[in-house]
Amino acid sequence: MAISVEEARAMTEEQLQETITEIAFEIIANVGTARGMYIEAIQEAKAGHFDQAEQLMKDGKEAFVQGHHGHADLLEWQGQGLTWKTNIFLMHAEDQLMAADAFETIASEFIEVHQELQELKSRDGRG
Image (cartoon, rainbow, N blue to C red; front, side):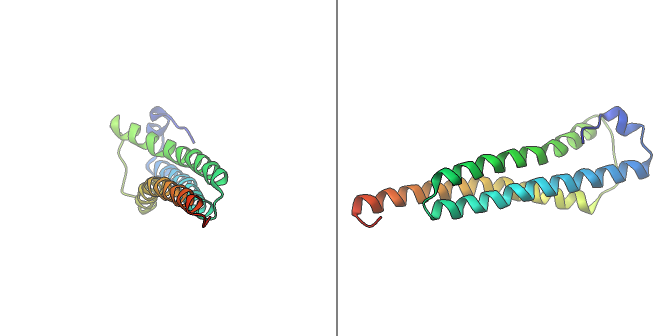
């Protein structure tokens, strides 16, 4: 939902609040999908399915980026002086965005640990 600052400024307060809520739900949906994929990637790595884990991480990143677009639009709007009332859905979206970003980092680290563990087990004859 790419809306320019000019389009947002032309909205009534009610329309703007509704649009921000819609953007918030888009952020929540996309970054929630990303977080789920990151968690699934860890599970795949634990099972030794590293190709699937890598693909899930890539797909998760794509979903995260889609969610981040709405966030970036809102930052641009505020940077150009547009203001609005605090919106609990937007606060939740920001929280979910940060959580998904952290999950990406954690998932990458866990996948690396599982790869190293599998290599060690293979060398030791246990894997």
